Structure formats: structure tokens, C-alpha cells
Length: 181
Image 1 (cartoon, rainbow, N blue to C red):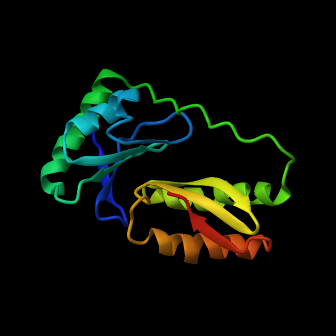
Image 2: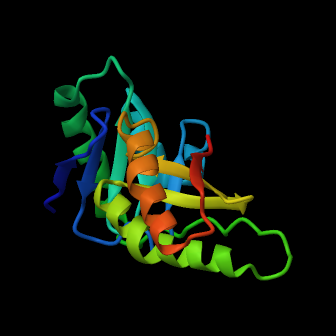
């Protein structure tokens, strides 16, 4: 098995491409405390020096602790991913989606979600991350960054200059975009 790696805009995050499906649908983000829900995430955190794990459809993004060196960490992570796929080739299942509040359909929210899903999320996934819609109120769109985008030095610029400008261009009701931590 050959696993490609790609740098991300976040110097503390590396993207691994195993050439196989990682998630059957959706995405998943893990911390050391929540990794027990995933055999692959548990393996990656067991390496040590890992601060976050994110799974996309066909990639794994690993964030390292500040004082950890990629030259030491990367070979161990590659081995952990290979060991996982040697034992199982079944893609992981996403956690059930969080239930949204019942209410009237909002055409602005529908447009925001559509634009996020069709144009923005694929671009962000290319950098090893994801962007999740958290809400819309009084012209402000609330978004949460995951994977390589979480903690990335350029994440705020991506939100303000990329995502906000695109949303405002296509959806005049949108006035601003705010990050949710």
C-alpha cells in the first residue's frame, strides 16, 4: 500500500491520502479524548505527539503538537495507517448528524448550505479540512473549521476574504461570516 502525503496551509497539519475511502460519507474530527470511538483515530493518537485527527472521504488529516517534529512523526503515522488498512478495508462511518432545530424553511439558509456544499467545502477539503455550517442570524453566517483548517494561521483570512466574499456575492442577505470555536 502506498500512502501519499500533502502539506497543508497549516504547518502543524499533514494530509495523508491512502488511495482508499476513509469515510463512507461525511467527515469526523477527533481529539485524544474522543479517539476511542474510532480504531484508526486511536491508533494515530497512540503514536504520541498528535493533537488532532480529521477524516474526510478519502483522506486523513493529522495535526501535531507544536514541539513535535514531522520527520519523527510522519513515518510512525504512515505505519499506523497501513496497519489499520491491513486489518480492515471497510470505510469508517460518520457519526449521526446533529439534529437541527425544527422550524420554518429559510431560503437564505438553503442558499448558504448549497453554496457551502457545492463550492466551498470541496475547496477546503483539498487542503485537508472541512467547514461546517452552524447557523445564520441577522445577516451573519456562523461556521466552524475542522481538520487542517482548525488552528491554521490563514483560517481567518480564508473565512473573511474567501468564504465571506463568495457568500456575500451570491447571497446579498449575508453581511458577514464569523468563526465558531
